[in-house]
Length: 131
Image 1 (cartoon, rainbow, N blue to C red):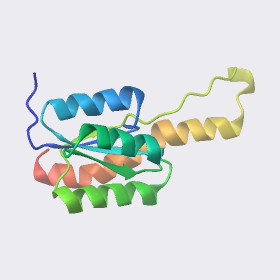
Image 2 (cartoon, rainbow, N blue to C red):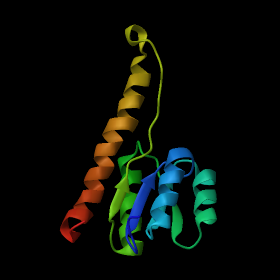
Image 3 (cartoon, one colour):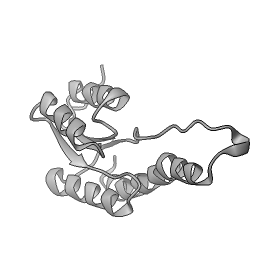
C-alpha cells in the first residue's frame, strides 16, 4: 500500500462513482482529500462520510474562475497541493456524422479544456513545492 500521510489530494467529480472510490483510496492511504464536485449534495455527503480528513468544495469544472477559487481555497487551507485527480468528465453519445456542435463543445470543454486549466492552476503550486 502506498503511504500518503498528510498529502493533500484534490479529486474532481469526487462526490460519487469512480471519483468517490478514488477519494476513498487516497484517504485510506493517509491523504487529506478535497472532494471537488458540481453536485453540492453528493460532494458534501461524501465528505461527511469520510470524516475529518475530507472536505467538500463546490467546483464548476467548466469555469476558470471556479477552478481558480478551488485551488486558492485548498492552498489557503492546507498550504499545498500534492495530488490532483482529474476525474470529472462527461460522455455524450451521438453518431459522428450528426454530432451536435453544442454537445461537442461541451464534451471538449469538460473533458479536455477543464483538465488543462485545472492542471495548470494546480501545477503553479505543485512544481515549486516539489510535488
